[in-house]
Amino acid sequence: MKQITLLLRAHAIRVTREVGLAVLRTEGRLRAARPRHGATRLRIVACSPTYLPTHRRGAEVTLHDVLVELVRRGHEVRVIVGDDRTSDVIDGVTVVSAARGRAAVTHGAWSDVVIGQLSARWQGAALAARARRPFVYLVHIGNVARRSQFGRPDLTVFNSDVVRRQQPWAEPAIIVHPPVRRDSYATTPGDEITLVNLTRPKGAELFAELARRLPERRFLGVQGPDASEVSGALPANVTTLTQVDDMRDVYGRTRILLVPSVYEAYGRVALEAGWSGIPTIAHPTDGMREALDDAAVWVDRDDADAWVSRIEQLDDRAEYAARAQLVRTRVAALDPAREIDNLEQALVALAGGEGRW
Image (tube, rainbow, N blue to C red; front, side, top):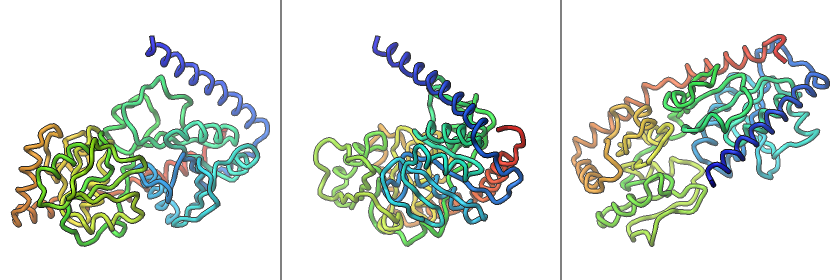
């Protein structure tokens, strides 16, 4: 009965928002200024529930990295964020607090294209409809039911092939893997064994168990935006950090990265560490395999004995050096610039779509 109630509620929300978007599109056709067709230097508005520097999860960091790449190509970018803050400029990206009413209309009228991500899908879609602008939806999370989605984005941008395959109905669509720049992450590795984001889905319980089994080694746990999800106290050989602004501070202390996640849309944290030649031991999720291919040590997250064994094997200098070279080669071989070029061309084409709005 509860499941039926949730399904009915989701259906009602979707219908309500579809009707709302139809009304906003009508309003836009009647009242909004026409788009700047033919623009090649775009004005881009992105909507996100949270953003840097307050939140630094993969979704926020990836959106920011993509927007910075577009700024470097000469485009102007504003981000409308769902939390209260004063206006700020981060790496050339202007960040403003949640805009409603006339303020939202002003941002929409200024833009050539609107991007939304996560729960800001509605905010972005509504702003785009009201302003007669194309709407682009950036997807970081897989396994999302089609019935829970609403509206028809003019373009859907997926962060991995894995997530794209899970939503085959989304058309048109392109894939833009998270751009992981060497100059943002490369450093000299340290001597600790690290897990980023101490939650159960990310493997916090296994991390604590490994620290207990290997008391002579030093472990580093990085907390995400939520509290640590480890039952009981962490062993004395574990150091924890709260949110970190510069991940080089983490990788500069790390010798081995652990990623025993039950699910990953894409393994960007391992690629970040890879610029410093830090080997990753990971559970073989599809997203991690897409990111690392054969450049990781793959171990089932339920086999703690095997994790201990793989950590000990990396004590061998030759083995460690070989693994470090594999991951350096892998991350250097990726080509985010080409995918950003594809995104830029798609956005310019959308902004130039005569007659669409």
